[in-house]
Image (cartoon, rainbow, N blue to C red; front, side):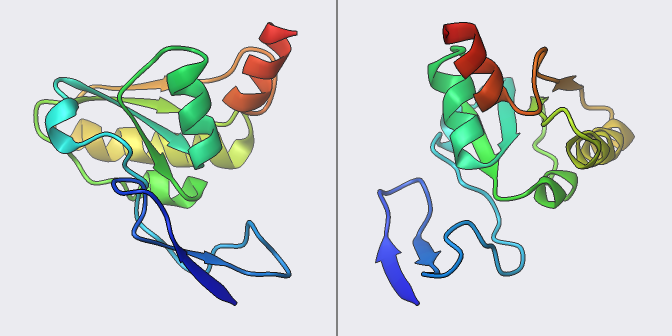
Length: 132
């Protein structure tokens, strides 16, 4: 196992496992490339940094945060006076956890919009198809 430090405001420490580079051990919190003060009244949340960067850079939506896995979206904490835009994977787990988050935020009367990619299972794949 190797440990490395990534750029500030992305994630403090990244653990890279030689045998499984995308494996996550437990819940890791959030990857927050945008600061709290940049959020304003709207925040985008996606599963995985690749999807969050795709939505931000290729689709032009921001600010974006990333959850390491779909289950972390369901656990996402409420932020007062913020509309949450979840860019979910268009597959059963992605939809299930996005809906669970929306229900939790709805209990405190906050708006949540769930966006699903039109042509594929995740936003990264959809952006690649649209660019081709």
